[in-house]
Length: 475
Image: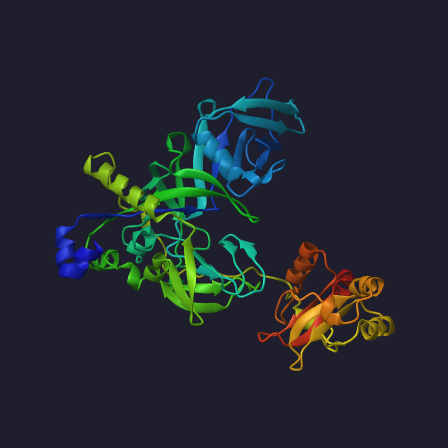
């Protein structure tokens, strides 16, 4: 379609093309399935239920449950979760079911263990709150250490960029005005036919981030397009294939369906800054992202996709074949998706404190060429455990702790340069203290130097500072 519009314009394209098919295949964490197990004898009102040790939500009727794609196994952790259970159901595998209950007169049973396949379930319905983002921000990391996110593994110092979405093939991107997309639109989902039944959660069309709620019969799906996944050191998800046909009803739709990757833009966000409003590193096109490299701060940075462009193209092709064979009928939406929604942040009773609010600003430092003996005296006199090592411009070059000093004295070391740790875990002044607490726990340390963007020392934050903050909160 892009080539047709480019060569002949949207007026001629609208005359020539009846339907444009689209596709996307990527991690869609906001997915899950409603399951109905049928009644046991004697009957049970499931209060809690686990499928292959993954807990499902049961706060509805007696033997209905919702298994979320991102729920973790209680025994296998990040190796297995709700997305994997859903894939196993689609594959026809046996699923271990364990349920407990409080017991009632009409539901006297208190526990049950059994195995089921999709053929044993009355209903297995994939019912997803948020799928098929119109487009998605790309991710990079300005920090000094590798971080693990829902955007994959991000290497330090802008070491890589990851992105999601299929760009020119993106379903909602082909009809951003939602003239053909809305409640009741028939779609390709997981290898079978399904429907859009509402706008997706976090639907934000004013910023180009529209989403859809989708539904389809899990029993009819194909495991090629429904895959459980583990995102390293982050969690589990479900890779799902979705395709939407876009009827070319007018020239406007022909024009939007003819937009190429070089004209579809998104932002690269800095995930090295642990805030909701992450800094924008730069704007980029999907053509650049798909090329495998982008430029950041004058350097060439490798790019990798989290979604499969090849599988997205396959979905669009399969959908085209279904339509041509008369197996898939186009449907007019009962109601179009709203175009004026804005995604609001969570309401909070108070702001989360930042590092600058509780850090110690007056920090005693030393130089790398200082003696171990002088450092030992400083730590003994001041009564603290961390001594940042700085250069003549007050830039952090390392750190020593009271333990380092004790070991150095025992080994007869003379200079701090011989014992300092040069790879230092640091924090920034505008970083939430919760993020720093995680760093302390992750690295098993009791304090971090606070530096600015040029690595100049601004302060020190320790576990003692965090303890005082917690104490104030409890009072």
